[in-house]
Image (cartoon, rainbow over all chains, first blue to last red; front, side):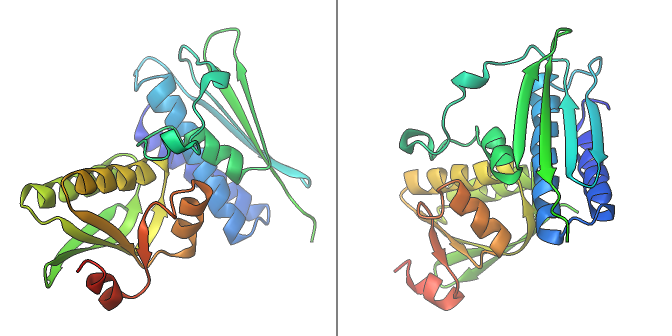
Length: 131
Length: 114
């Protein structure tokens, strides 16, 4: 996908649409949508920095057990361990830095890896409970 | 799809009715500009009615924090009204719910500025 905010909207729409067809309830749909949105914003804005020559790879898959989203950028990567804690008193009034925290809060599993080709890939997983 | 802001005056309190999405891009920048505009006009008692907000992302949350800081630092007060469950949950997850003065009744919220 292109490194634009339109791609952010498209990815969110695609993920929510597939999750809905997979039987995910409304409350969880909102969480998935927001987590995808935050991941895509990270890729487009912080990873690829809106660079028209860089793409975002977005994949989404569902089976009977879980719903999985992967977002990969072509950016320079970042040190995950050095991210400030947005809940620390000294960071509460900061205007940014809550994206990954929110993704982790909204999804059941979150993984991040640095790609050999450069860039960062995040994997978001929502467990689907059989009803 | 995007955000709509409507400003009205209730006594010396400015109420901004926010409807739609406060997300990165047009939504969050519209809110930022509206708040800065009010502070620039010395209208520093601001009640943000979020009752019709359908969606807010981390950028939108950042704009709420930015607005709160801007208004507070100018000697005014920014308070929140009518949070829906979604926004309330997000503010609680991020520990911001206790930072803001949150109200459910507009008349009581307006009185609280006195």
